[in-house]
Amino acid sequence: MVNLNRDNIALIGAGFLIFIVLSSKQLILYNEEILVAISFLLFIIFSAFSYGHTVADSFDNRSNLLKSELIRFLQVRENALNESIDQKTKLLDQNKVIQKISIDSFLMLSLVVNKRSQTISAVFNHQTQQKFKNLWLFKRSFQQELQQVILKGFRRAVLENCQKSKAVMKPVFLAQAFGQLSKN
Image (cartoon, rainbow, N blue to C red):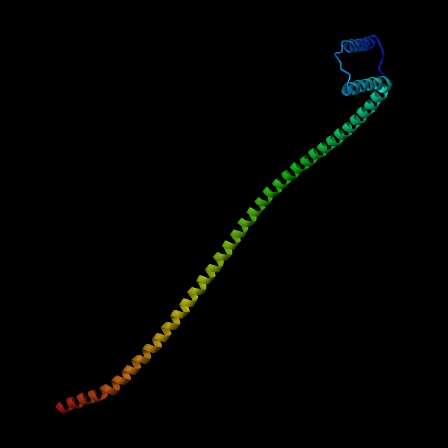
């Protein structure tokens, strides 16, 4: 309810006097719009005097309700932000752990690759040496067999040539020997 103190009463009185003066001088024409506006203005003034306290309490209650909802919202938002910060911190910690694990894994993998490379190189060298040794032994045995085959072939060829030349040359030598004997 609005307090009726001196200032309010003076304002209401001044407004009423101005209204009467304007009406008497016929500066205000009374038609439907003016009458509706005056009725509405009187309704607002009556409502303010009669229900002003109730409306103020309603607005205060609504204000308190909005404040409490705003405080709850801000608390929920703060909790969500704190939770988000905690999760971000956890993610950063997990990223650090993952980076450390990846570096360690890379180092271990590099060591394994180096050892594997050395092992493969050693095995390859050993197998290559074995292959060369086997090839050398095969070459040597092949050369010996080839020499034996050539030797047998040479002997056979020499014997065949001897036998051929004996068969061909025997009559020639006999003829020469007889020719020599007959000369002597």
